[in-house]
Figure: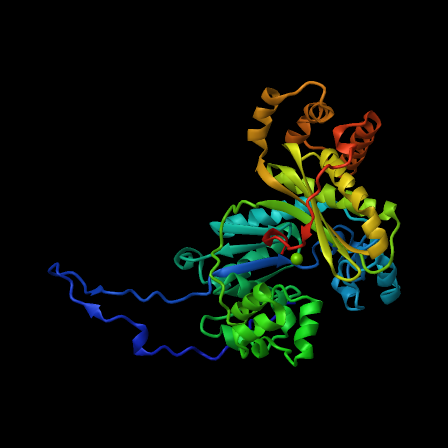
Length: 455
Ligand SMILES: [Mg+2]
């Protein structure tokens, strides 16, 4: 189903919009413009696959089509729209999801199938626009500025992108088109499922202000609740408040951020090949207490996902970061910098397990509701591989492990094989008493702040 593009009243432009022509000093030449008026065009596309993992499962297994599908293990990783209709949401515990939707079909995740689908979709993105900024496995910004003569209007380009993804990858993708990245992302979310929504220039606030505050990036349940208790329900309500009022309600960073978004102030350009400072993933766990084994399983899944992404991007990292959120919403971060950069699942997992073990007493007393994993201090895999043999120190268990498994960077095992290999590697290092299984001497604790790469 295609959502009808949102229509705004036509924008009237007055004579003051245009610069006065001045005479050209060269005889026979047309007049020059002293200040060229460049009309603001809605040229930012935000393309986002719908219910990605669940859609891949429905695509590959016809029996799942039209039925409520949940991808996950202990928690819901993705839910099809049929399951969402029953209130099933990502990151919900599977027990709760089953209670909400008793007819749901639960399937285990197939990360390699999702990676393959993502690769194919990003190929379509790159054929569509010269500037593509990937945000995650299933969404990207595309800048189609200056393409009108060759490829048509941004709306036409967006429509073609959607049909090409459908034809070549077999998945539904929603696209928002607007003047800013922020608004294009809001538009694609409003267009879902399987829709296209164009917000014409000049009509941004008319579109944005009636939306609920939850549509603004960075407004979670807690912030939304705080705003609602002050009778602020829509983006328009937020826009009526002074920045200082929002800062006094929500703090400096959130107050400024929301004030800017409510006025569609977002100067960020679409940047191709933007280098990430860290690669991370997180998982909400719900409120039920989990035994240490279950937390370790979540950690393993997160590390598997993060290191897979690192290897795909050809990056290696030295600093591992473990983020925890507790029942009372307090958060802590623990980090450890390794002697060498790596993208190896087993090594990164072992370092994070050490941090997790040290944090167990805190988890047991405070209750864990979210685990996040990130690897920072990133470098290109090629550069580090060249440096490795020159920097070897005898007898270091980590070096031995890294050198033995260096081929994993260029030819990484994937799927269950990788998981088993990483587990074997970890167990082997533990048995040998490697540096990684020793307690970390000086863990860095700090207040949690989500880096921009996580949002
Ligand atoms: Mg998506």
